[in-house]
Every structure is written in C-alpha cells, then in structure tokens.
Length: 542
Image (tube, rainbow, N blue to C red; front, side, top):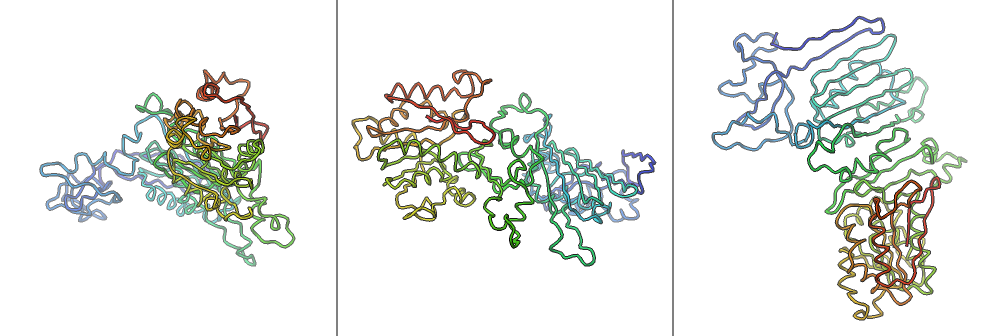
C-alpha cells in the first residue's frame, strides 16, 4: 500500500446498513509535464521505492522519472493551461499556487476567514435515486469535478430503513446532503472559502440532483411534477479588516442582492436571468416568485392551458417578478415598475400646462421614457444614459419596461418611438456644455420637464456623487429649463423615524442637492413619497 497519513473510524450503528469512505491520496506534490505544461494532482507516493509497484499501481513512474511521463498521476487533470517557463526555471516549484479558476488563488480570499454558503432544498425527486448511495456519491463527485473544487475524501452511509447521508471534505471546505426517498426530498449544503462564485453552480446542482420521478404503472409522464428547488446563498465569516481594501458596498453579494434575494430560502422560484459587468457597473437580473405575493402552483396552472381555469385565462396575473440590480442595489421590479415610474413622471407632467420637450437623466430600463411618451403633448423626449450596455440588456431581458405597443402612433419598443432621442453619454457633461448659462441658451432648446432617474444619492461612486454635488451641473439643470419648467429628482428611500438627519447619515448627498437647488434659483420645492408594498416609502422625489 502506498504511504498515507490517513486514518478513519466508523462507529457501528443500528441506523446504517452500509458505510463507505474514500480517501483521495494527495501526499504527492503536484507534477507538471515540461512538455505539455498541464497540471496534475493526486496519485500515490512512489518516491521511496519506484521498483516495487504492484497490482493496480504497476507501471506507474515516479515524479522525477526520466524521461518524464505526461500521465503519471491518477489525479484529475486541471483544465487551466500554465504559461511556458523560461530557461532555468523550476516549472513545478510554484504549481500549487497556480489556479486560474480562483479557488486556490490566495488573492481571491482562500485564506481569509470568510466564505460562501449555498443551501439547496429539492422536492419531488426520484425515490430510487435518493436511496442509491452509489448514484448520489457519483453526483457529488461530478459536482466537485465540474465546479473545479478539490475533493479530498467523502463519506456516505445508507440508512435503515431508507435514505442516504453523505459528506465530502473539500480543500475549500465541504459539501453534504441528506435524503428522504419516500418524501422525494434532498437537502444539500455547499460551503467554500475559495474565490470561485457559488451562485453560477445552481444549474449544475439542479442537473445532477433534480432527478425527475419515474412514472409508476399506468401513470402518465405529464402527470409527474418537475422537481422544485428552494435555495439560498449567504456570505460567511469576515472580510472587512482582513482583506486589504475590501469595501462591503463594492461587493454586489454584500448589498441588497445578497440579503433581499440570494439570502432568502423561502422563494418558490429564484432564477438568475443575467449577471454581467459593464464598463460602469455590475448588472444582475433575477426572476423570482415570493410566496408573500404569488405562488408557484398558480403560476404553473397559468401555463397549463387548463379549460375553465382562472389562472389559464389570466396568465399575466401570475407571472414571476423580475428584479434589476445595479452593483447589488435594487433599481426596479416588474411588480413595482408602474407605480414607481408613474409617480416620478406624471405629477410633473400634469402640473406643467403644456410639456413639449422632456429630458430624462438615466432611466436605462426605458420605463421613464415610456411614461413620458404617454403624454400626447410631448414632441421630443431626450434620454441621456451613460451606460449603453444597461439599455441594450434591458431591451433584451426587461422588455416590459420599454413596451410602447399600446400607445397610439408609437413603436412597439419605446426606444424606437420617433419622438425619442437616446444619447449614451455623461449627463453632467451634456448639461454643463449645453446649458452653461441661462442667457447663452436658445429658448427652443430648453426643456419643459427634466426627470433625473439615476443612481441613488447614497451610492458612493464618483459618478453618483457628481450628480448631487457638482455646482456647475446643478446650475445647468436650472439653465436648461424653460421659465415654467419643472425638475423631478429621485432621491432614494425615505427616512424612517429611526434614521438620522440626511446631513449626518448615508443620504448626505440628498441634503447637499436640496441646498444647491435653492442656491441656483428654483422658486419652490415639493417633496413627496411613493408608497407601496407593506406601507413603506421607497422613493423621495423633489
């Protein structure tokens, strides 16, 4: 037997029928072929006596064999390609620290006292699969291999009278699950301390563990329910104070996305539609069914085309919610789209006696533009959005936000309306250069209404701060309005009784812009809130 420092102890218990433990020998340092530059791990230690290999180990060469062997290790081959070493370098010396996937990269936080935790509950799973120790262990191994995690050992027990418990020890921490075959339920948790993200593994977990039930005799395939997943993702441990330069608000998973969607285990549906990074910000779009508002059964019924079923007759009432997050901060939802965008546009538009020219600052989803175009007095609607990618992604994933198909004379897509002009540039520079002084501007170029539907004032990035504190920009907004012009500004969540004054709290920028608006000459200021949900005020508008 090859040398190993591993020992195991199994305790006899009436509740188990079989117990199996597999230890993956990793006592051998990584070997990298000088020819292929591919990284291998695992395999027995033959350095002490390479001539006595017998049995399954027969024919295996030692690490320093001459000539080298490209496939001497029985460990899995790493997928990343290593760079070619220069003459005189030891191509194996630093191999253990090289991993482009991030899990073993110290810069991604492997050795920080922090990690990620993925909790997954699945029901309506095939009972035979849930009672097969072999199939479950195979699924666990596939999960670790395909996600590029490093499995050190696993321990599985078939239980009496039924069920399986498994735990896999990872270099990055652990994966474990327990099954209830008669109920068709498995609960699984995966914890890692590496830098690789866990949320993208959800489709893989669903594919490996959501095995659909097999129809019994006389049962139709279409009558078998699809497995249902409940899952949550949580950040664990400590980052601030341990990771140099780490700022919680710069991590989308540490913001509203983390606690309002990913961290909740009770959503009937939670499906990522998009997670990407533009030149300016990180964009996440999720489709969810919150049992407080809708339920999965009614949604499934709405898709069934069942004759006479109310859900099938009115599917639009049971669709999942869509939520847009920018840098982890919630910006817009399908359920809240109408009340939010109506409230930020229509009070100003109805107050003005004849709004012909409208400017929209931000509003990348297109919903603010949609509401402005509903007014038949509008001849020109100029939308200035700095992030073109947000607009294009919204047109693909959030089509409901820019749907103008019910407007007479408009296009199906609000961005294609002949009255709409979309400019992809910095709004601060657009107004500063276009409206430097009140006298220097042609009156016909001024706007009757300006809607500032941009980042919240508590977002601590330079562009957001500039929107609320730049003197030249705020003055140019005043200069860009007609004599009876109206400016509307979305100013984030309203304060509660427990919040400090804006001047000393997180909404310091809100206090700053209110003072500056008075200084540049606005004659009156009116603050109102838009209330929805369970009575909370989500938007303060000037």
